[in-house]
Image 1 (tube, one colour):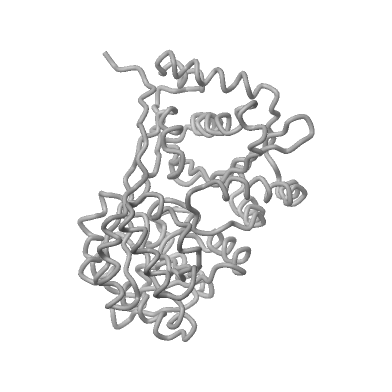
Image 2: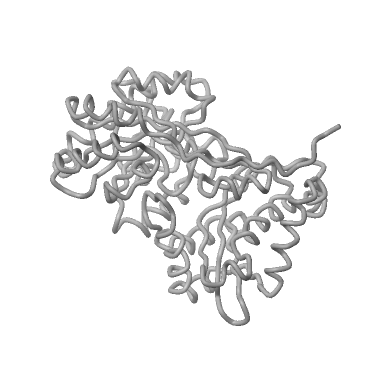
Length: 387
């Protein structure tokens, strides 16, 4: 299979190739979904794809993005000790610039295994070998990338995948544990939101009802594509508020991406806004894929958030939507772990694999990478204990 490996722009492939690859009904590996992000975010991100063939049949493809971010403002600094911070400062001086160029295999906008699709029955270790060689081929063939890309990251593997993906260590990738994904398992006996609240311990039920009481003056509205465009400037400002408050983000999303996602996914793309009188004060977004609602980005007017419990209301609304749609899980993402645990979400550990492009630099990076730790938080347990 390695001899048949090809590296090209995936979106130019004929539909026959896509039909061969898109066998899982996973929206994140569809041509339309990927195109929406590429069209609206090409100003800040370079998109590449690797397609792997066995004979004339496509058996795997990988999604790659090249982007840059400020080296000293990543969450690596806040989660590591003084030695590691000094190591980062030294590396920044070594690069002679305050940013790094990174090639990511995975989604910079979503937590989880959304970087590599492998058809059932294929040799996963062999696919990983082809992926590593394909990444090296791209970096070597493109003069700009060869000069400027510093680090390669294969992101967000679940612990259940480690017996296979740990094979990446053979190619001098270092594994690091990043902030966990917060996931809520929706119980089949929850027929409505009241059933969900009834399963809470008293103090957590009081907390939820307080949030709804504080947010009683909020008016919610699901936006159409035309309305998203109409409010685009305000939505971008609300999103920026959250982006700047977060410890770490890979890249800032162009809000126009949501217009395309609404056109492509219809009711499976959630876009709910929150108005206080006539003022737009928040929004939440999400994608329904298979049996899961994946919470995407939110936007908040923080000057009104505490008084009107905007963020808390959004989180409960995600749960309400999931229950109403008879889904199995809510994927809340990796931020605000303690708050999300008060809704019953539990951490799902994620592992990234990292290596520097140059062997010597990669050797020097390894001690620093091994010191990286995920953000600690106090896990809450809101549900009543079963007798």
